[in-house]
Amino acid sequence: MTSNIKKIAVLTSGGDSPGMNVAIRSVVRTCAYHNVECVGVYRGYQGLMEGDFKQMDARSVRGIINKGGTILKSARSNEFRTKEGRIKAHQQLRDAEIGGLVVIGGDGSFTGALIFNQEFGFPVMGIPGTIDNDIFGTSHTLGFDTALNTVIDAIDKIRDTASSHNRLFFIEVMGRDVGHIALNAGIAGGAEEILIPEEDLGLERLVESLNRSRKSGKSSSIVIVAEGDKIGKNIFELKDYVDENMEGYDVRVSVLGHMQRGGSPSCFDRVLASRMGVKAVESMLNGQTNYMVGLMDGKMELTPLDNAIKGKTKINLELLRVSDIMST
Ligand code: F6P
Image (cartoon, rainbow, N blue to C red; front, side):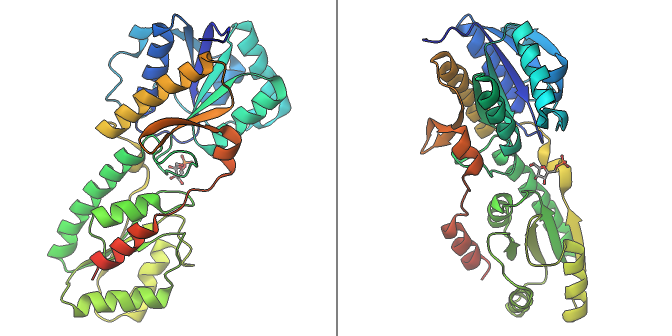
């Protein structure tokens, strides 16, 4: 290990996601393994400015591998967006003799980390934690896999009642401006249609497709709607549109909401979080800074934070085609 860093801080920021606790555990234990001190920062950047720190050792993170949420709590801080706020945060880090900061969060949190590094030259490293899977530089963000499993469990349950009543259900899932959750969970949950921001199906085609489904003998249907979908109507307006424009449909709406962010992390997310924590700490101890760790082609890789923030994830076109064929 080539850097002089003797103490590393870790925080979680932005929307929480299942797997954040496993990543905290991994950061803390990797520090312990390399005889480096570790400090947990409560409430993200807000706690960083206020010096809300807790010394952590390998035993401080026992019993959290299966817990959703984040033991360090999370926050979205407006004050950290100001120069004054960041000066306060820097002073707190200096006072506590901390030499590096691991930020577990999404692109907003990484933007804060990058600005902080540019202003003070303070070493930072990002771990992508969000259910949305919207971060460039990793095939999977922490929590995406667990959220997908939560969503398909919900879809399966809704399908039971949809088919008992011959109903059409619009189910809204999270994902901010991208459709990764909707597309994957839609395929896995056997949805008839999936509406995502990356592809504008258009209302007419939606109606056509639903009519086709019915003619082909389907008595109930599930349509997954990504929260960021751009069809031009929200999920309740979609219901009204179908009520007004299609005969004989009994339509219901279900917005899954924040339940998608909770729950015990899946095996995949636990392994991913453990790997990411090790990579983040060891990279920092090797003198690397301003990177995000990510999973690419099965390997842990580093992407410059700047690219991770500016880059856009792409929707898998093959999955779109699979979903079209499956809804035949
Ligand atoms: O980014 C994660 C996410 O859960 C999005 O899917 C959703 O749009 C947003 O956060 C909700 O944020 P909040 O915590 O402010 O309700």
